[in-house]
Length: 123
Image (tube, rainbow, N blue to C red):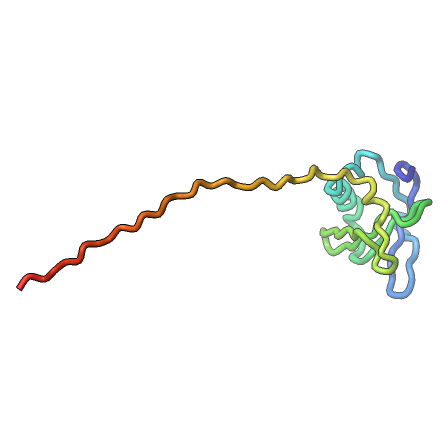
């Protein structure tokens, strides 16, 4: 299991990636990875002082997540641009309940046209 294991933070540069020197190791609890919103909130708190750019977190099984930081915005990518594989963090997020589409039943109104009486001008 990847949760509660030390993971390496990698900073993406134009031609290579390096271990992020200011926070090289992170560890996530199961509670943080239950939903995407909780995870992104934790990442925002964790990355307040980081430079803008692309980062990914590596674990023993591969890339756990890939994110783009832009100010206080965190964009979490779902699939790899190169391989097309889904990142491991998406396996841990709880699936939201499926929305069931319900058909609205509307009462049909009977349309009655009123015929206006023509006014006849008197001479």
